Image (cartoon, rainbow, N blue to C red; front, side):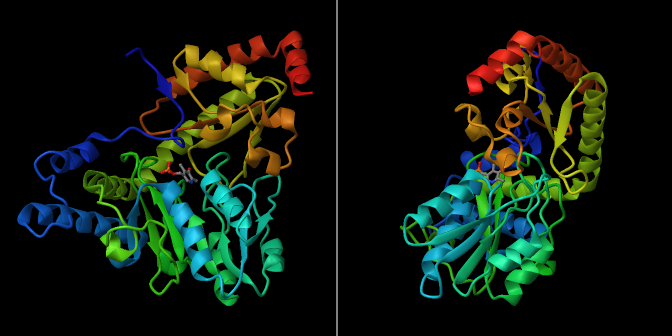
Length: 392
Ligand SMILES: *Cc1c(COP(=O)(O)O)cnc(C)c1O
């Protein structure tokens, strides 16, 4: 393969070789079904419990509070629909934010079609919810608050501790989507009044198709996956043993190397943002200036169609994103940027760059060079006119 530069770590990451090495035996010699009673099944069962313990230890929760799922999407669906269904007799109101991942937003929309009422908290220009607004929107019939830990598009980190305190005072369940947070923000579940927390492996150099939901003991939640009695009869389906093993290893590595890794990617991100600001006119850095993930830069290039920038970079082996994977193909402006009150044309001229520790300073400098060529090319007056005309 030709040389490429990957700056889309918030979309997914490659599987680290140490992770792959631990997974391999569970795809080959230890293929037993963890539900079987013979020895081959026991190998799988033991491997699953080891991984569960690693994940629990990284969050400082109990192993029995970790349930494996097929990824962040299923964890979000389960947390929201499962709590809504189980607590319907107590109330039908859910509070979330306007900038959640589609897995949360669309789960909430589904519930709205089925007798639930949902409040979508607005965010400010930095993508931050307001604690006062959260407090004011809690009602007698509120059963769940779901606010993401850190945003996947702009990197803004929400005040999770304060939200948890409010949820506890008001006796409302609190779910947080921590898919972008793990590996970058130390999470100690004992310090935070979180009842449910979604995780995924493939954003932290683990395999795709495996995730987990932390469910605090005594949380009233229904299952949404019916079938066999796996995962203490809460989540049916034969366990993805190799995936679970890989997830355990990935979270172990990512927790151990968190500070070091954060330093590396923050330095790369800062170098990138500084160079872009110096070399490219009329840029706008989106997201919170300080309460943000270390490896995220979301940048608007005034009146330059982001789609054109994406393909210009792609042709030169540079992989970035226009925000969320889901709104890219459909040319819709990002719901996150719109919620931050950015005009449509600004939202459509924004790119997300997310860094990983295999990126180098040379990569960054090269990308900034290509990017300034791209902006010069597509920032020409006739291109800008066409961009604006296509919008109207
Ligand atoms: C990637 C992502 C998800 C979805 O996780 P999958 O494992 O890909 O289903 C959910 N929430 C956030 C914030 C994400 O970044």
